[in-house]
Image (cartoon, rainbow, N blue to C red):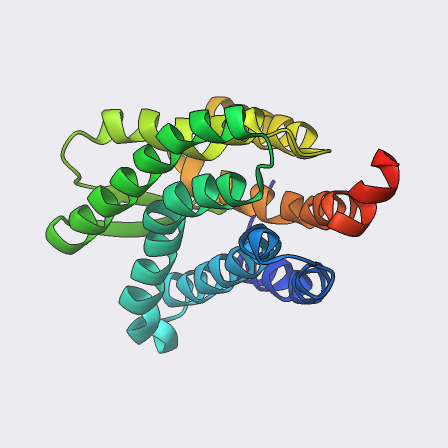
Length: 218
């Protein structure tokens, strides 16, 4: 499978309409962060599209650092806190919400640490065999990988929302596939497929809106 600037831009642009739809259908402020997730994925893919251009075309070389850091910021510094907070804000079950408190703290700590690493350590990217490989000289990189895996892939499993576990299973499956088949390109490949999967958030929003839940309780 080959990825490219065209693929990244296509997914980024393709998420704009679903993003608008999920936000417009949101009936409570607690759901807004989750509903906005496709917007963030759209920005992520568009930034990688520009990174592709900077790596493959000399005329776009000046876009290399802005696109590299914008992609790295979203994929590594935003997602740990965003995922845990989005799930926590929508959780109606008090017992589960107490458990999710720990994931939120872990996600925020991970995001702050990744911001620190992005500001103080070297990062670079290269186009290899139809994929983008990200090189990071971060301290304790293996430990941060485990933490980010927990915050982004495990947290949704603790949600009681309808269809959230299906979404979480998809994220987990894509992550494992990317790890075993695209190990050196894990960040890029997993984010690409997770971006497409984020369309499923429309289903989660639709069936967890107050107007959808209340009739079922009557």
